[in-house]
Length: 242
Ligand SMILES: *Cc1c(COP(=O)(O)O)cnc(C)c1O
Image (cartoon, rainbow, N blue to C red):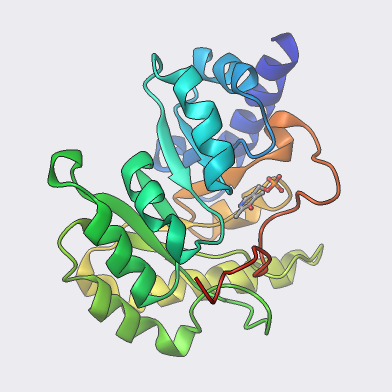
């Protein structure tokens, strides 16, 4: 428990310092704790310290944990690749989805969301570094996808998400995050308010470039084992075919 507290405090301090440098208020920035591969008791430890937002990449893994945490006021974000046949489970069990990048996925999420639940918050994932194998809509196709998603009745389009190409070059980090911010600015007549960008290694740069949600895993929960890196690629079987 002590370690969890220290790690959370360290991340909060990083957010505060980055916000200060960028002349922003720390409360403008939501810390999303990425809890993939983390078990429910550790999520509870963090929640007890006041952490509310949690992000998961795998539907079944998330559904296994959620029943153990129902007494807590948590906000669940789905941030992984979305298979068509999982859209109903995602729409029913999550509050946010960051990884929408095709219209058919958005349509299915909207259709599966019940009115009583209220609208599902969604971000469109943009392939900001234009990497061939990475998920996300190309920046040139973004405006059309936004126009198609806005009318869907049970979705609330909030903004954009990106997982830029990993690099230690802070100049390149800045350029990639700034590119996502510019994408949002070109859509600003739709009142989109969310930029989901920045992870454990680059959250300061993301905050400097306007991130409103940073997605932090290893800095809060410790390093994951090899196969559980950020889910950039289309790796789940049936992703295109289901
Ligand atoms: C795993 C993951 C993160 C967190 O990555 P860390 O480097 O552990 O902070 C953020 N976003 C997505 C989409 C992820 O899959």
